[in-house]
Amino acid sequence: MNKYTRAPSDENSTMPSDVDGKPGLFDRFASGAAALTSKAAFFVFCVLMVILWAPTFVILPSVDTWQLVINTATTIVTFLLVALLQNTQSRSEEALQQKLNAIADALADLMNELSTDYPELGDHRTELIDAVGLENRESA
Image (cartoon, helix red, strand yellow):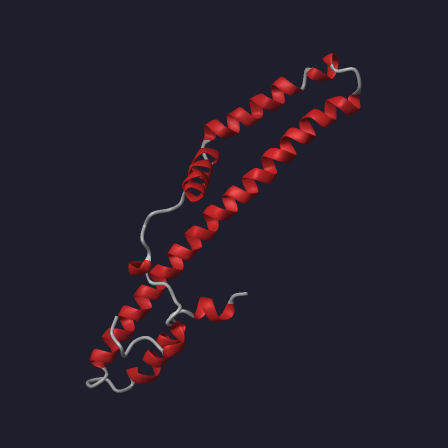
């Protein structure tokens, strides 16, 4: 990074070179779960589970028990999958933002180099510099 590209308020923005590339145990688990649940085999498993559950209507003594079994199972699976998939999505969005910051930063460097020949790049370069790390200043 060149001292001319990043505004002082943007020191907190994460760039790709700042990432160690070693996801934690939960992140690896969440990525694996996301990969597994996005495959057709998982969908087939879910359909088979419903098909196997349907005949329990005859076996279980009451309709309430029959519905409680499938409702409880699907609620638990849904709850856990939402948490895992949200983790994966958040990390993906973070990686994408880091890439965009790196591109904007590199483009601002290039614009700085060209500004002597093209003075009109100055205002655009300032806007681009302000965009680096914007996600940290505007998000909750």
